[in-house]
Length: 193
Image 1 (cartoon, rainbow, N blue to C red):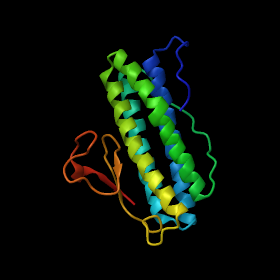
Image 2 (cartoon, rainbow, N blue to C red; image 1 turned 180 degrees about the vertical axis):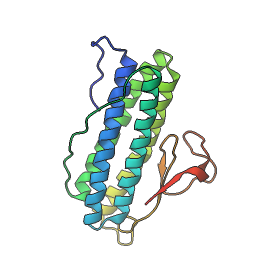
Image 3 (cartoon, rainbow, N blue to C red; image 1 turned 30 degrees about the vertical axis):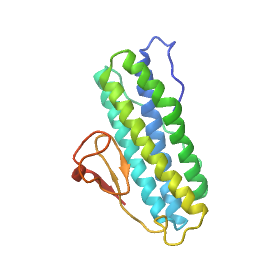
Image 4 (cartoon, rainbow, N blue to C red; image 1 turned 90 degrees about the vertical axis):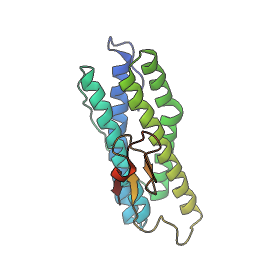
């Protein structure tokens, strides 16, 4: 996601939001490219997962852009082309990126935004962190299924994943009540195939 920039005279929270915004849009582009490759490799369920994760990353970027504008900053970034490999390698790359955000990026950003009492930024970061955990779980499951060549598993057939339009929690089933992260009504989740 990029380093935290603190010596440029710009508020650290804004720099963290910009780094998160850039990272989320980059992840979105990667996941869309990975979905195309998974489809070509015959892994339509994994393609569905990548498309759902791409939508989730767009939701995160939109949330961070909204907070940036509230703080008087302009959310803008360039997206570099990504390296697309076979589906298994793409899943491993995606899982590694999610784990990096979970372990290093978002905890630091949350701590800084909380210390500055910026609840909008902190909430955006917390929701992204929690949603990234759902992506990591799904990517890890897909890796295990691909590596074990599980016949009849969900990786081969297109399927729906459900993405909360508020926090981007991603799941393979529609929640019974409300989103487990932000409490948004689950019947309003986006079905992505």
